[in-house]
Image (cartoon, rainbow, N blue to C red):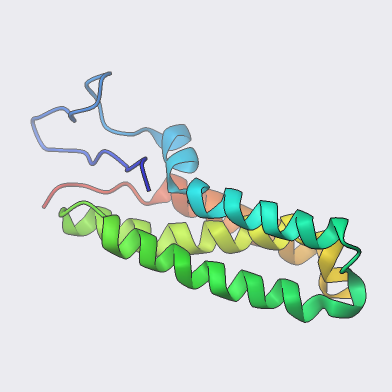
Length: 137
């Protein structure tokens, strides 16, 4: 992951180019594991292009599971040393991936895709991105 949340520091500013901690809108974007999500999107649209849809939902579910594990590994191995930042990413990034990947997979999941579930997952991921403001210990 190349985009990490800049934690808030008591009495100090963060090290980013704007000299401030990551605000809510930035956290929503930064918590999403884009490197994993773009690869997943390419694979799932490839399945859709090959006509592997509805009756083979298990392939989409398998891809979601594999890439969810990959998301956790990417976050775990690349997280900054600040403990609270790592914990925030470990909670929000996998949920964000799950929310986005489930929604992206609608064409392949067929009857397994429930729009209400997709909506709730995305709202939860965005909500956690806004609520979890990592701070330096």
